Image (cartoon, rainbow, N blue to C red):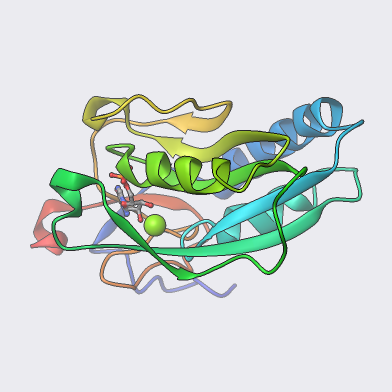
Amino acid sequence: MPFDAPFYQDEVDVLIDQAKLAARIRELGEQLTLDYRDKDLTMISILKGSVFFATDLARQIALPLTMEFLGVSSYAAMETTGEVRITSDVTKPMAGKDLLIVEDIIDTGLTMKFIIDNLQARHPSSVRVCTLLEKPARARTKVPIDYCGFVIEDVFVVGFGLDYSEKYRNLPFVGAMRQTAAT
Ligand code: IMP
Ligand code: MG
């Protein structure tokens, strides 16, 4: 048991446990297997947060898909402008591909809007969005979400890829950060 005496126990409360995550990811995988059966699926996993979700999801899709990773980072003023910088680009041309952007969470939506616009400019056949979590309360721009794992309240979450100051990504569940721990 790797988390027998949890190091996070005073800081994080379990919000979505491992069993719920696995069951939902299996459902999404089944749906994606149907939807992409005649397509040339390329999963674009957004670094770093979506890696845990994307690798689990890929293993639930029974198709010969391709995986790419796109690193993005926000500028300081991003909360107001939505301007994002690409820190690590994909390795192949995206023209003609059926792209599935895989993200950990859509909060204001500004990051996802930038990513969609950036990938659309490379002339793929199609672009769809799959996010593990969505926080609709904080949405600032409308982004099309084709596949969503869980809709959550406006709480700061960590684990299963999501971080607080680069920590907690390795928690095997999605947890809510306690106010006292986040300040
Ligand atoms: P958005 O551009 O506001 O939609 O959110 C972009 C990024 O903010 C996400 O990819 C996450 O990295 C981060 N983020 C938003 N909400 C949370 C949270 O509750 N926990 C951890 N990271 C978050
Ligand atoms: Mg992120």
